Amino acid sequence: MMRLLDTNVLSELVRARPDPVVVGQLRQHHSRELFASVITRYELRYGASLRQDAEAFWARLQHSIMPVVTWLPVTQAIAERGGVIAAALRRAGRTCGDLDPLLAATALEHDLTLVTRNVKHFEQVPQLSIENWFKET
Image (cartoon, rainbow, N blue to C red):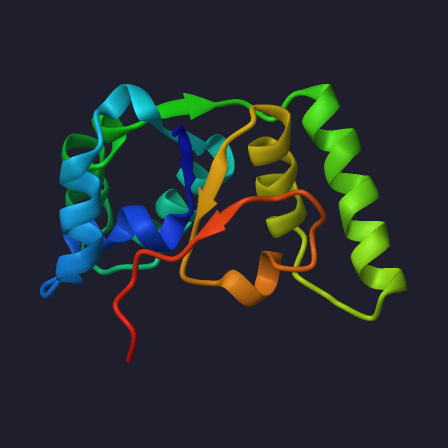
């Protein structure tokens, strides 16, 4: 099964004490089965840029995270599908931010299972397959 990894999954690789279940799951999958959106790349770069050691940390992310996945662009089809998803969620009284509908649309367009800690952000999206690799707390 092919998977789209959310930012919170990939960022575990550079945490001081990464979640062992997430690390184990990542090790069980070949990189050609793992994908991420350029939106996640944006979020990683944004987070790195807020740090005191911004450039050094970004270099670390580029070395340890970027090669783990195949990076997917936001296409016209993804942008349009994301808009439909966001509108449907808003009509239902569910908000999930501006970027999460684009991640959901990316997973749906590429027939990928979305792996995230933020299951509640995505569980209302019809036909979206979701997994949570984080250990229960």
